Image (cartoon, rainbow, N blue to C red; front, side, top):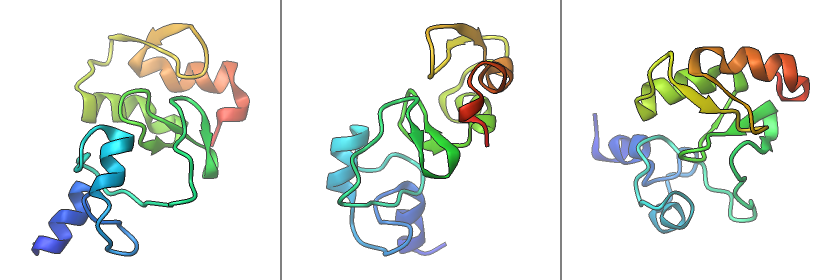
Length: 115
């Protein structure tokens, strides 16, 4: 793959415009290259963890990446190294649940967070 494509996949360049956004990432994620593609919207105020994002997505409590509620458990396992049976706090309430049951909890208790 080319250098530009690698930089987009690492999050150094905006995935839509190709502009350098490392400095904005540093403020939002604490690193210039968060390790996943990012779209920078200068007028956008970053969402806090658990807050609803456009398209019914929510922010990951660890990295802030917007994922569908159904995919949050998989994101925590794949990206942040959680184990299926490990308990995590729901990003929408104080309840702790297993990673594998996080989506079901959010679906049952927080229907507005559904996809």
